[in-house]
Length: 240
Image (cartoon, rainbow, N blue to C red; front, side, top):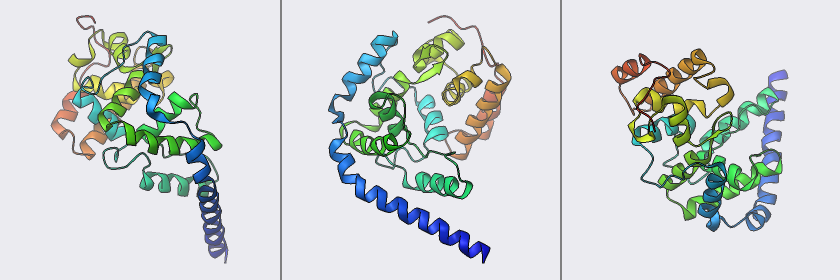
């Protein structure tokens, strides 16, 4: 009886959520901003922070692979919302009575940073999803990724992967190694924890996780992973 009761409560919770989403979806779609100005907004953000805005051809392929493998494995196939990842996150949160997993895509994270002041809590979460769908209609996947990596927090007071490459590795973004790209992809999840200049052991562990995910998603081989794991966490490069 206990298991049946739990399943009934879980089904009811999903049904209530579905009603809320469907009822508010039309209103949110109409009331959420038009993202046709997103490029101007990203440019304003990067200029205010003194970091360069990346074009869609400026993201090194290995960095793109590392970020997608780590943050949004179905990035190239979804349209702003990853229904599989979102369902998995909702199931986990409901069964564990928490808001532990968000199921956000890279597009949704960009929308959150650019339009919602960095918050996707409460009603903002629904607006975030609507904006993600809209953004995918006006930008290519490569430009979405470039915009995201231009403005994302990469450490205390640091923004964008170009600045992070200079701060952490003293090298231009386009000349980094596989291990360094993997570290950049990992540090964005929790910059205060994974900053290699502050906590190299945590950064090394996080880099290893990213590389393992890249192998799992068939972006690199096990041999490439092992070689990248052997790299020093920080290194003195030629300068930016």
